[in-house]
Image (cartoon, rainbow over all chains, first blue to last red):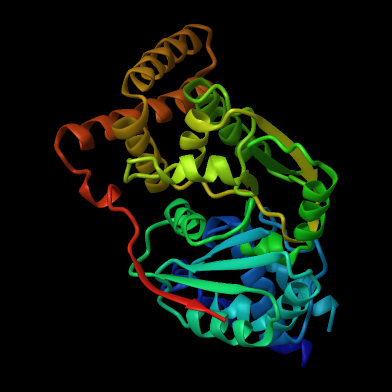
Length: 81
Length: 284
């Protein structure tokens, strides 16, 4: 996948079917993941699955952090492409 | 026989993605290990994914499909009532996938005289300070209300005699650990590592109100009242000492219990009191 295709819009599209909290919101890169995604260990697992399905990137243990931001997650995905 | 009980709610995506891992994990166990998956009224195709896994495994695999979404504790109770064996293990799906089962079975095999209940402690807890504080306050509240349970988690090893006593509990609103507190004769803990999937618990306001209300209604009204008074005193002391943030935090807890009290008083309770109903039982 092209690195440029990984952005806030595509990340939100990848996750919005599972998280209603992402719909109709003005989300920015510096928003924390925890503030908008109902954070639990199962949801963290669901997010890693969606990232793998949509961007072909497998996150390693501990890489997905609740207190990280959307921007940081995008950078992480890009760094693995 | 050991039964592994796993409650599931809307896990189609995870089960679909990890179905090969799941089949491999289940088939790696010997025939003395059985699995009970409870579909807690999922709105997605969790049941279809479970059936697919069921067809590929050698172990005894039971699916309990509930009529609606009754919550994790009720779903676990449904799993307990449909499980077989001398030892019953309750575990979340993510912990199962994280390889915790191997560690759990080792604990069971290496300890002939297990306590009636043994709670698993994840040694890779990595929570923010705020969440840790919230967690600590609720753990403390729980310990005051249910002093015999020193540590609570959803990973539990339960012996058959205790499971039988748990299932005989007449209350509809279920907090398994509160029932365990009342009925278990011995308690234990063990440590495990599930670093890769670890994430902090969610403390949503609605969830806390529901919990406070359920506790208030069913289990220990007098103790909860005392806790309410104690919190009010603590809040007052904190304000006097200038710890405004801490006082605000305690005030939130006070409001929770007040809401729980008002809900109970006004009779807004029925939807929290329904016990699970099994729609279908599927065995391989």
